[in-house]
Image (cartoon, rainbow, N blue to C red; front, side, top):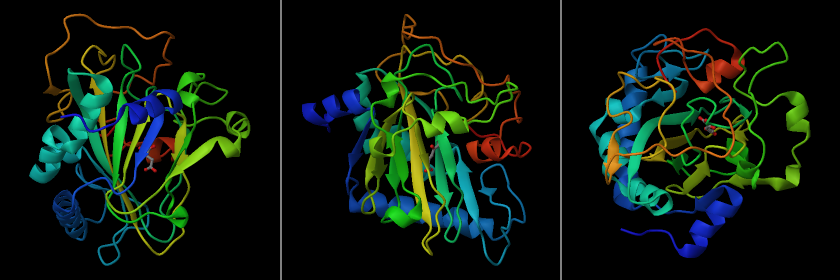
Length: 291
Ligand SMILES: O=C(O)CCC(=O)C(=O)O
C-alpha cells in the first residue's frame, strides 16, 4: 500500500531524510508502548546489560537507566509484528521499491536527566551493503521536543563524502572527527521532533546524531533499518540474530547492485565483539551483540 506522496519521496531523495509528524495510529502507539514497558520492567531485575537490554553506566534496580533494546524484532512478538509487517514496512516499500529486506531494529532510549549524546556519524560504515539504498525508519514513542535530544540530520549530506569514522591512528570511533564536525554548518541541520508517533526516515549516508537528554523526560526512539533486496550486506554482523536480513516484501535479488563510491569498512567484528554505537563512541568494551 502506498503511504508517501510523490512530493515526500522527492524530499527524501533530495534531503536524505523525511519527518512524518504524528504519523502512527493510536493502536500501534499503545501496542509498542506496552512492549517497551515490559522491557523497562524487566530491567528492574538486571544489575548490568543482558542480551536484550543494554543499560547505561549508573543503572540500578531501583532507578533503571536503559540505553537500548537491541534487536527488538528478535525479542518481542509485538515489536516483531511491527518491524516485519507493520506500517513502517509500507513506508520502506514506498521508498525502496517492491523488493525489501529487513536488516535490524533497536529501541534507543535517551533516559531523562542525561541520556547520552550520539555523536555525528553515518550508518552505512557500521554495516556496509553493496549499495546505498539502506534507510532507517524511526518512531518516537513519546512527544519529543528540543530539550530531549531529538535526532538531527545534516540536510543533503547523503550526497556528500563518506567519513572513515576512525581517529588519526586509524582506530574505530564510530563518529566524525572534531574537524569534520566543525565543517558542518549548524543551519544545515534539521532537528526531527514532534508528537508521539512521529516517524523519521534517514538514508544510510546521511550524517546524523543527537544531543544528550537533559530534560526530566525519557526519549524512546524505535528504529528499523531496511534495504532494497539488491543491496547485499558485506559483513556478517547480523548472523544468528532472529529475522535479521529477512525479506519483508517481494523477492530476493537475482543480482547485486553496486553503489557509486567505495564504502569505508568497520573493524572485522567477530560475533559478540560489537556492542552498540554508544559503546563505540565512548570506547567501552563490548557487551551484548548489537548493531
Ligand atoms: O537515537 C538517536 O538519537 C540516533 C540513533 C542513531 O543515530 C543510531 O543508533 O545510529
